[in-house]
Image 1 (cartoon, rainbow, N blue to C red):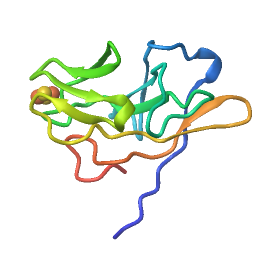
Image 2: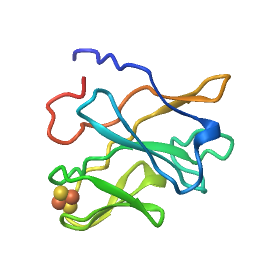
Image 3: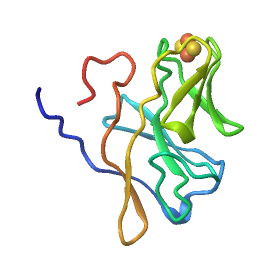
Image 4: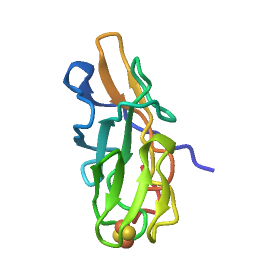
Length: 129
Ligand code: FES
């Protein structure tokens, strides 16, 4: 299989991240909306002192509508799919059957948070990069 080379893209600094307030960015390129959120509870793949900062593709895996972060989960209003951001983006309601692709994060010594990969295929693509 071909190896995928993901860029490391700075999303925010820890000092800017507040529980429950999503930060929007694009990754791995400008046409791929993504969202970072501090959940306030530990998450699979979560970074930071509380292991609760995660990021995901913001495109619903059903038909590509934008997902919104509300009340601790991602919801797609097109056909009401819901995804659990603490469980690696697992779909648990609605028509989506694929996990919302998680974007692994790394934090450097200055508290800068970087997106470094995508776990799973972004909606509408044949490859992520
Ligand atoms: Fe999100 Fe259909 S596009 S549920």
